[in-house]
Image (cartoon, rainbow, N blue to C red; front, side, top):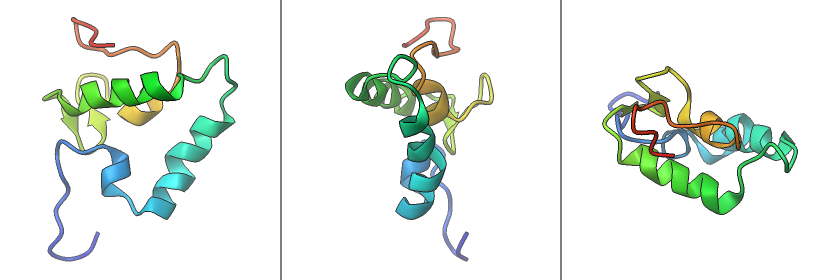
Length: 87
């Protein structure tokens, strides 16, 4: 990380990483999932919006389970680990 820059505690990886780096780490994995496994695009974005509102999100990681939320949200069988299961 460049000197003087700080990470946003309530950010997703897509907001913290260089766009090229993000493409390599998250979007490539998402596109590689079969359509049966992959969460539809609109639902994926809804899930991420809910994660952004959660106090358990820190630097793209869910502090309840330790997952990278963008990875968990991309699979249909993934779910929010909070007791309320926001998604």
